[in-house]
Length: 313
Image (tube, rainbow, N blue to C red; front, side):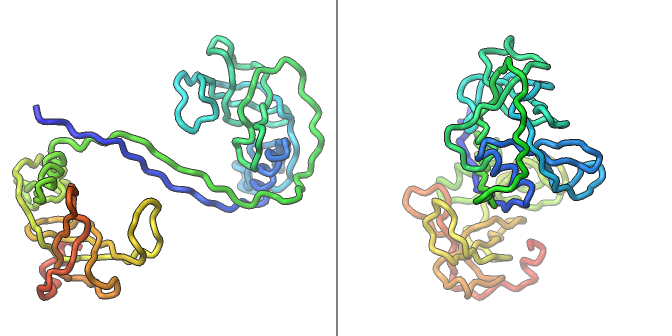
């Protein structure tokens, strides 16, 4: 049996957004241990608040304080918390309708086990010790036997309101390339590039996918392509990526390797960024021990004629 390749991969980026007056008041309230909802034209109180009535689409700005206690409307037990979740020990995800609200808020309930959770149970907010104006200012909910406290009637006006948030989006997964791409990766280790030819349309796909995306038939015939190729399209990158030691600006391009029926992407080096052009002939540059080309550089050949690569744009 050939070795099955796999590798852990992480895709992450910080998502930055500004807040309108309603969301700003809600998050600032959490920082100050106040839970705010918004009242609709027909008298319903929505928590978390929104800026437009989900039924009538009417703009709503009437902020109203609700209690930090409430009732579980439904729940699910989380026996294996993941990175970044509210608690590190098993807990319940609950929809809780806070006292004074007509809608439910999703959050974590700290409970000793699933037998301790039931629909209709009374719970209350457990505030985080350090609060910054985020939903995580509610550390979690906890069981509560007392009655609802009286809200203070806060109007939603605060000094130093929160005006924006940064939410880190992250996806951790294990990637396994399969038969076709495993052969492609193993060939790259020998500084060769291989694709697979469709038995129907005869296009050579690089990287190979194991099937032709056009004809829908399996591919197995390996074809070595390149190493030289032609720039078909490109973009100039002006924003430096995290953990990428490349000075900006630089060029990222689609490159049609000789013999391939599909362009792959790669960085262009060895030439000023403003001299890169469609039709530029390039070749790979490898670094010691690398499993893929570091970048592509000009070969010095005349530019390719547009008609030779126009179908690969």
